[in-house]
Length: 190
Ligand code: AMP
Image 1 (cartoon, rainbow, N blue to C red):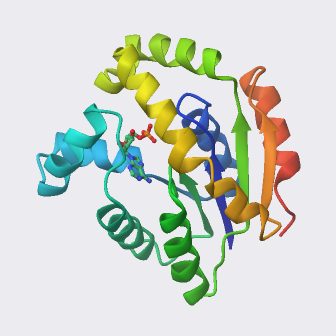
Image 2: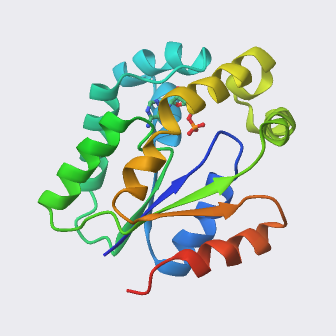
Image 3: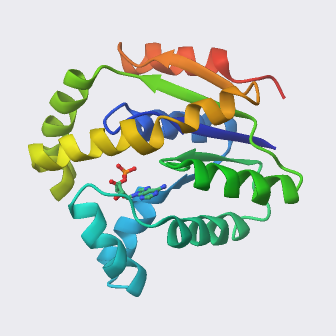
């Protein structure tokens, strides 16, 4: 099993790069943001709960997010591995993921972190708003909030995996292909 956490701030290119990794390594892509948005669209209870947090640029509570992620993993018994995009976003989520995956004897293989400076993130997210239709991309105050939440709550998750020897930082500036090559070079042989 190859279980990759694709890490980085909002706008770093996680979704774009996931598409390549999924195709090349035959992994199942689990984006918690995408799953929440599908629930909002479908008008589910989970979607209703998540929406207010998302529109304000805040994190959906850990208990709800962890339960959702675990049930998504469990749906894919035949998977060759997973790419986790946008999860874990807190140390509590990382600890829960480790317990869950270690219990299945399919631990996290590596965390690959896309490194992009803050000004560039803001520019990218505002540009993405033109096509994403995401209300959280269109509002500069919400973008700032998401970056602040990332710095305060999510950035520490890097240390969690660095302590396990599983962390690699990758320069997230360049063409899509250049960044893909950097990621590929950082993926452990399996
Ligand atoms: P994303 O699509 O990854 O940018 O996520 C969009 C929004 O969904 C975030 O700003 C959060 O409100 C929520 N979200 C996505 N993933 C998580 C997570 N792992 N924990 C908490 N909230 C999340």
